[in-house]
Length: 452
Image (cartoon, rainbow, N blue to C red):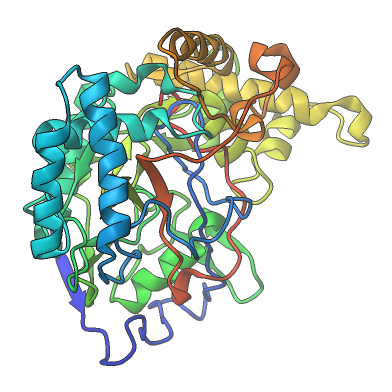
């Protein structure tokens, strides 16, 4: 695994020079992206393959107490209050007895060091409950199955990158995708933890030309531009599905690039069960959506690098990644090959093309032996999750606008009801976007590992 580091000039944490790719004359770079709290769709934990301007709220006020993300300034009273809520919840749900003794130790630790250390059991429980509390994720029926990789001793960028590669390999599992999270070093007073700037561990480059045209994924123009500023030479000729290196920040200082080994990324070529020409479109997508630019808040402790994944729901790839006009915009191409009339919206050519694109994604992943789900199945399972939570006496937050699939919405049972949406920790939150990635984010698919 190759890595290159870029020292950030003193006094300007994000003072990276204006990027220049080797072929900038041909593919000039464009605007970046801006993040907000998390999104989630079916397959992902909180998988946001996407980049959404509608994420609720910039993280001006970080919930949960403790340290402001990246700040490291202690707030002992607030931190203990958050710790008390979490530890009490842990002891209650795990039938671990009265929490008094553990809370006394936590209080002493906070008074002495300004922070505290979760036990392994607490960390595992906290990560799983963070998934359970992710109100935009339709796949939460599986929250208890999350595999937690405790890597809190890891803070150096090369080691973070190496563990991310290990995460990809373990989560891919030969195609039988396993919901997995890797938790790296937490923030502590005066010492930021590591951070991954890449929205997902696997992303396709977006090369933007001077006229605004993009080769690749328009959602990733900003991160492609940043990678170029850090020395990535891109691919030549530029392709639509060039895998970007990861961008990792160590301890609030330098940014490093780390290439993903080819054998760590499983990709699926997209064909169709009936249309032989479909494979000639050259479409493909990666198997595991590992969200990597969010932080995990457990009991007031922030873990700024905690990449996690579930598996995809077909509409995340078909309807959004490949279908959206702001992404790969394949609906007109597919409609043309199908011989559909695009003279009027009333022919419903978009609907027909989108259905066939989603069918192609489902067919291709199944043929490749890669876990994927469909929006009808996940909608039924989400209602099962609501029922289970109610039986346990727990309220389940849900954002209707994210739970309802983007395709065949009213044909799914989740469409025909309303939900209560509220924030509670443990949870996942999106980091405030650094200036280089801050301009407008393009709306992406509903995030979520299709089975998250």
